[in-house]
Amino acid sequence: MTAEHVLDSRPLDPVRRTANKVPEVTVYFWIIKVLTTGMGETASDFLAKALGPVPAVGLGGLALIASLAVQFALRRYVAWAYWTAVVMVSVVGTMAADVLHVGLGVPYVASTPAFLVVLAAVFALWYRSEGTLSIHGIRTRRREVFYWAAVLATFALGTAAGDLTAAIGFGYLGSVVLFALAICLPALAHRFGTLNAVTAFWTAYVITRPLGASLADWMALGHTRGGLGLGLAPVTLAWTAAIVAFVAYLAVSRRDVRVNANINVNVNV
Image (cartoon, rainbow, N blue to C red):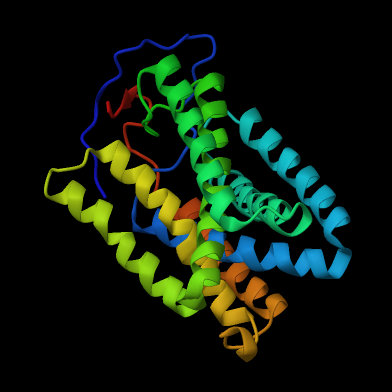
């Protein structure tokens, strides 16, 4: 999914300005994004079973804080730091949705729209403050805070949505097909000019979460639950290895870094 880049209408504070802190949206971005969603889903379930829900949430929360601290401390995009933070957001976002459902008894039919409202609120505050929701201008601390708040909300929303479709009869494989078809819609709408680049990006970003999570669940869970029965630990390790391989490639090749990254550009909604 490509985007037209124009000069940002709001100048940035030169003291707080950095190079863009997120990667360019390439095919590698979407591959790793789907992998992180699936890995986060199975890793969260595995940790909850191995350590217990409370220790797992505590450990995940600390790891998320540490990964975001590293990401915020850097002044430019660094592949391993960025994707480590995304992985931890995936794990903790899954835990957040599971805590609401399993721990507090909130049904997915209620938590899914609730997380949608949270995401809409983040976007509204972000746009009101910055005049754009583009990822091509994440160059200030404030924009970075909005970005990661949106990412966390998309993961929680996607987790709840994927569990909802699995619970109402689609099953895990059916959910994979459903969300694979759904993710084509924003791409096609943008391709034919009926959806702007920013809206198309964030729509696809949300859908990758239930797509990857449903695929990983289908691979990991037992036959009685409609899965292949490969196990949580093996699937988590396999998807983690794939993430590491792709991120290592990007770290070396820098295929996800703009050549003119020092130019302050973004996409207006």
